[in-house]
Length: 178
Image (cartoon, rainbow, N blue to C red; front, side):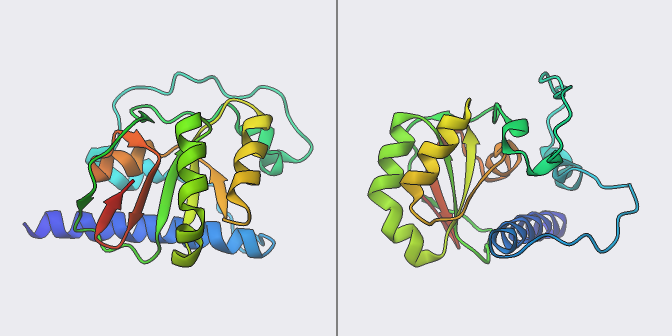
């Protein structure tokens, strides 16, 4: 029981940190204060939630002069284990500091974002674009977001930790909804 509580708090802290960093990056330029060359992926901290399957997407062999700032180098964005579809709204016990949502570039996600955009803005929600194939997909979602911060990223680890298999989905303190 204590271990589960510690794991939930660790996951909550990691997600909250990611969301704070995402929000901060949307508002300010990134300054690297210290880099010891030993950065680790988020999945290392999620322990038993990490997939045993190796990453099947080969790394991008082309070097861009913009490095990580080149959004096209992130494409295609995939989140194994997540597909567009319906979810049953439910309560959860991980008290997130910020509301966020997972969305794809499909028609269901676009409609959901359009219908929920104002509510998401009022919540101060941050979006993760978890499935997109092209730069056109990124631009289309950014236009529909109309000012909502959205970052392209795999949502597999977060979805697995929360038992989510479909998107679009909103996640707030104590609630998972569509």
